Length: 81
Image 1 (cartoon, rainbow, N blue to C red):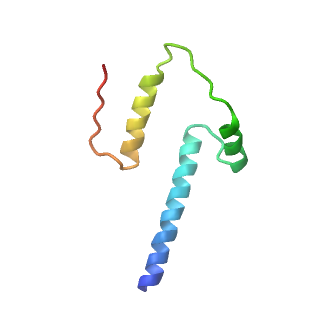
Image 2: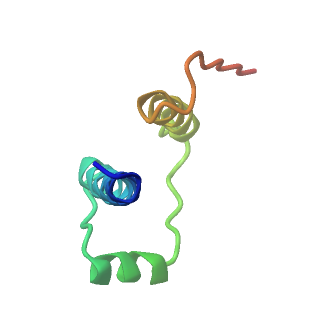
């Protein structure tokens, strides 16, 4: 494999990886990954969740899990008051 074709292969592999990661994240969260559905979601107003629904807990746990699974962190630290 020549250097140019190897470089092109790695570049296309990286693009495919990013595309699949985005699709998997959308499917895991139950969101439709279609471009039209994404536009509709971006145009909608935010909806507030009621008190005592563990919003902060869910966000902090999901964020840490996401960072671990995507390889952005190896040893997360969660500090809460």
